[in-house]
Structure formats: C-alpha cells, structure tokens
Length: 70
Image (cartoon, rainbow, N blue to C red; front, side, top):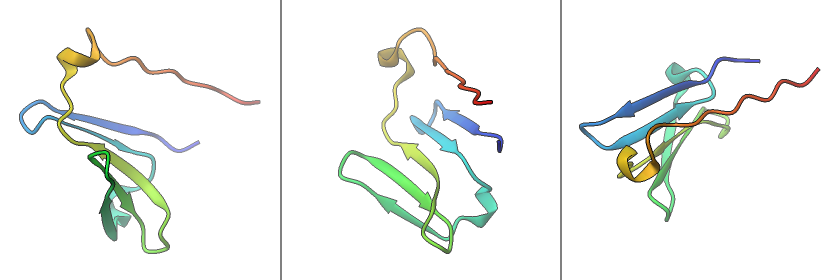
C-alpha cells in the first residue's frame, strides 16, 4: 500500500490528504462542499484538500484509523 501524506496548515486553515504522488497532480477541482480534489493526468483522484478546516471544531486532534487487509 502506498503512503498517505496528511498536511494540516494552521495558517491557511486547510487539511490536505495525498493518497498518491503529489508531483503527478495535473488538475484541481473544487466541489460544492469546499473540498478540492487533486487529480492526475488520467483523472484519478490522488488527493483532496478540506478548505476552512478548524482543528478546534474537529476536537482535540485528528483521529486516524488504519485498516490492514491480508
């Protein structure tokens, strides 16, 4: 499984999650829910960014769950 990269920008109030290689980003598409989808040249989503993310409203911190399939 590829690595997932999570970036919380407290100045810009964004939370960015990369599920693919950020250098392969070709296009960004903003949804109606203030979420930006980053896509590669083939149109596959390789990351997303939550706009106006406030960690104080989200709780004490970020909770991450990892599922491993054998």
